[in-house]
Image 1 (cartoon, rainbow, N blue to C red):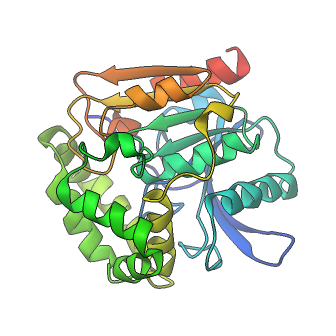
Image 2: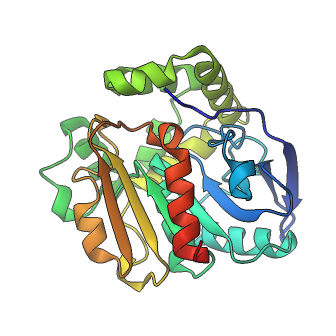
Length: 292
């Protein structure tokens, strides 16, 4: 089992033009190739990946807290499009260009929104949440997930209030209950569990509003058509992933909606492949965006 979970090399916040601040964490060389991580739901910037390979690959991994999460200021009513513009301004402020993105789990729609707005040069979607509101998945979702997707569509305010009832401890219990054995072994390894649970506590440090808004956005219809994304997109899935909120078809339909998608389903992996296959994921992303 490999996790590559290490402490961030650098932590900070960056001010946006409207005065809000986005919190970030970094690993790898400061002059490395920038790769932005859009973390999974209910976790903060401090939960990175590939800490054992980023230096060798020359990758500057930058994880950014979404509004209301961790060290990032609140932005009530924000949209996926707003996130893409926040990242555009964040990258301008930090003088970063040619940035690729990794979207893990519920972070996938946020990474793809950045690609749709031409903010990033490429994306790796890893165990990604798909467009769950797409009618294609109506009969493929677990009943409890389908009910939540329907509630978001009918009454997003009520859905957001429901999600605001969650806490870091409740989210940990939920995540652990959905894991296959291959993933549970990763998540309950002492170093990993400690880092993951800390990232969850940080995600809820301002209260549940940031998580609640994130979840409404990930369960809503996407405000962009994946077909407009011109940047290369890698789709990574583990065949043993049992999460009910990841892609119901392991990215088959999403690959068909993207212009330049490469889809991989690893038979031995689960939903934790961000930590068990970090080097492969980063090498492929660098190869498709940098020709390396």
